[in-house]
Image: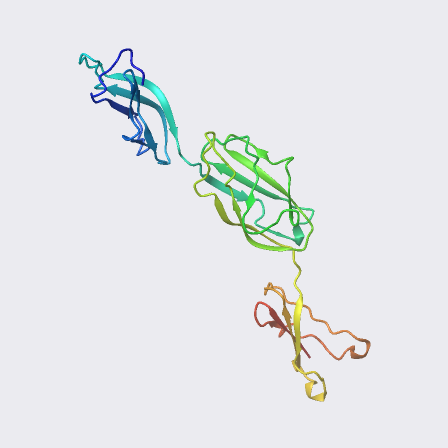
Length: 274
């Protein structure tokens, strides 16, 4: 603060910030670093606290200052001195066009993520996801910079090309730590868990167990022979597996019993034969 005449440096001075809105504990006077620089200049130093708030039109009130002859100045109010914006933006709505990409999506579906924030955002920030725990780029996904864009002051669309690659990424976590509002505030909670999954990995047969290594007259009857097939991953138990026995000399010997063939658990299918 610069005054128009020398002031009494031993007299007290009062400086207040005033607003119709709650400023919280943003400003805390640092008495150690505050003081007179010379008889006409006073430095008020403040420690700033991130109160996650946004306050416009803050006025500054100055009082109690007196000159060398003891004349006390009138209360002076300087309007609209500053603005506080320590409020962190929030990703209010996050949606994906397909939260499970599979082989059936090749050529039909690419990944699109739409994010709507609760305030206007910095449009110079490239709308892109940060993958925090799994590396999908250049394997299953390729960032599409051509059509990824901000579609409004607070909403962006992020596009990825879905590539043909055998891979499995379950519950992909992403971060929005690169996004900022107009005043440079980032998200307080940028991590988004389990946004989507990719499964283009085909299951493998791990183990095949037959009821008996030799089929003889003892097995000739309904439901007298079975094969347990164990797969490498969890399977759809609503979809029965088709286990066929092939060979020129066994034609007509094995008839699959569709009624009694069933899943033993989510990785093992039992094929029963008459």
